[in-house]
Image 1 (cartoon, one colour):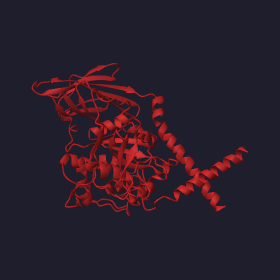
Image 2: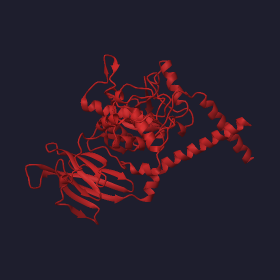
Image 3: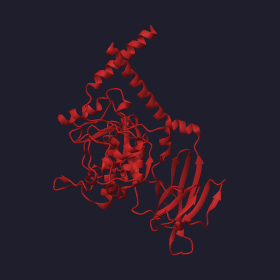
Length: 442
């Protein structure tokens, strides 16, 4: 009886999947690839976010006015590149240069970043030239951090080709549009998402929707209906999809999300996701920081080496640093990129001492700290004072402290549990679909 019940369950479940899949749009794909455990651990993470003291968030923020026009990824699994490069990197450039994406009713393709560069270079790096297969956020960040990306007009998007590689001329243009750092934020912390959006940090998100998500969006647009995504079916990990969260509204308790399926989907290319569903359908969330136009902390002459105080078995440090210089300890460089002595705030860039690769950045007010988790270590950086120091007392310095502690295996396991659950769900659904196909064949 148990065997029969289980068989009937599989048959019904598989039949339901087959009915749902009838609605799928073959011409437009998803494409976000799940990260490996090692990739996820290697991305800096904010483990315990709290709103800065005294912060009152606005009831509504909408950054879509600063985003490039919604485009269509078409048949390529390039949603990750569209979210990271086309949407967010273009946003960074607009905020820096204060330019418009539209002039005379036409898109300025010399002002929006190329998703094709990030997608094609990442595909070469992983050795996969099946254009329907996507890339992970980790792989997209790697391309942007190492190579950057050119503007669209220098490397146009072609949904029929992901193997074409950029010329040396194009690659040299891409360097100007590198990112400095990226950071994983807690996708289950609504306040952390809202806060980042409020300080002009759109959130790149990985969403697992149901099979109705895509056709319902097209249907909503055709019928002039506002589209708010509330799942109606099973959340399918095979539909893992990258988008960008660009706004929130506390009155409707929804996030505004930019997609890459064209303007005839959803709300002219956007979709609202309720707070209540956001933490259930979103499984990755990241912010990105633009690179400086010059590298501050590579030259060893910029290293300040005096007055480092070490406590507690070499895991706690306190020191000071001046703008344009860095301190080095525990294989990390703590560089001071900006210092506002009047406001008593500082902008630090922390990089790997061996590779000079930026790991994370932090803009801190006096006595404010930020904690970042990297692999099995937790690094807390605190600005303790802004004052005079060193041989030139006229130039003020940032006094800071650093605490480095280990993350327990139990904590790491808990943080990776979500990824393990998704992989298990994906395995189950694929097994059920395989059984469905076998039943149809017989």
